[in-house]
Amino acid sequence: MHPKAARQTNSKPQPNDLTLLSNLVTMENPSSVLAEVKNIVLTLDPGLDVKPIEIVFHDIIKLFAGKYQGYRKCNTRYHDLKHTTDTLLAMARLIHGAHTSGMTLEKKDITLGLISALMHDVGYIQLSSETKGTGAQFAQIHVSRGIAFMRDYMKKNRYSAYDYRKCRAAVLCTDLNLPISAITFETRSNARMGKMLAAADLIGQTADRCYLEKLRFLYQEFREAGIKAYNNELELLEDSLVFNEHMQGRLARDLDGVDHYFTSHFKTRWGISKNLYIESINNNLNYLKGFIKEDPEHYSRYLNRIEAP
Figure: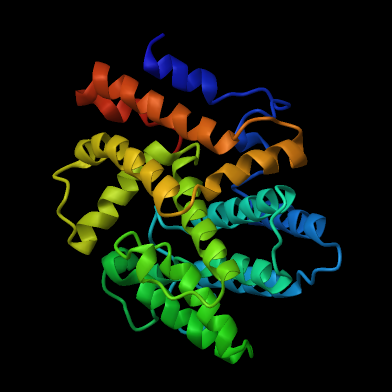
């Protein structure tokens, strides 16, 4: 089958086909994501207070929408609100899968882990005074910027310094340039949460049904940030195959294979004995391999799920 035809076939699944990741939750609707996260959390412990998660969630929505005092609206199209909500739900699913696999998780760490997911990329948001360019220019320092925002936010909302340090360690795990071994964790549970967040960040974006289309936006962000690893979009697309191989190594080696908890989640929550994230990622990469091999000069013809940049 021609790769373009395969993409079109997979882009129109039957509404009741729950074997496709994108059909489980309406990911384009942040409220749907929050509802599923709350459902997952309350399944873990009906007595767990979800209000702190809701408060941070709505503040992050305001931040990305340009309605948070002192900040501009998000203007990065790869590291956008949907990437944050994708990461949030992936994190909740990992936590749930770990729990159903027999791991004991502290209530507070569950809450702080989800808050960390919500805040892991806020460093891309510009201050009101930062009027030049977009938040993409901060790609190489977005983690430290985000941690600074999180420190001030948590202090303002009366979180303890201990809670902040736990969230800081978790967010640091998403920095691909920082070895996990260089991060100081407060507890073993904190380390597990950090590794789960790093996995959720990686897998949430590469499993996105529009991942390949959004790589074109990532190329634009790299250019503005002064990252000169790629001369054009096609080079980034081709290298994403290598990146995903490295990602699998990072998941297994540095993150202790925490992604296998997805399987337990989907079995318990949906009755599906598959890791739908891995299936979605493989679908994206196999499609990419097909058109890169057959028709690389016209790669843009095969990327039509969202409006081209």
